[in-house]
Length: 164
Figure: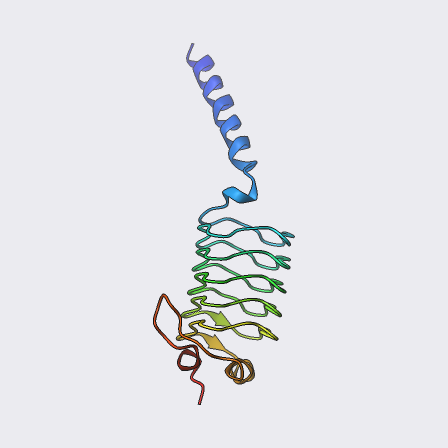
């Protein structure tokens, strides 16, 4: 009888594991792993993706509006034309990532580490880069288009970048 109960328990656990492993992207949550995944054209708007891994992910035109991405890893990720409007990117590690053409309007990028990262033609109105670690060249280019104040933190974009 004990073996039967143990066997039934294992079958139930295996079934639960399969169900949880088969969750759609829409059910992504804290600590999700999208390493090396192609998530282009997906919609993660408003989701809690705290501490997720997007390392080397292909995320072209992906929607991240108002998502919590704090503490996530974006290393070597490609976020061309992605929309991060109002997203929380605090403490994100984004070294060698590509954000070309991305929309960072009103995003919070406090304490982000983004060395050797490309921000070519990004929209940063109202973005807060306070204490972010960025290459000097990228900061100079971002300062050319910096304007607005972040509605969540109250910090002006130019001030957060240290623009003159």
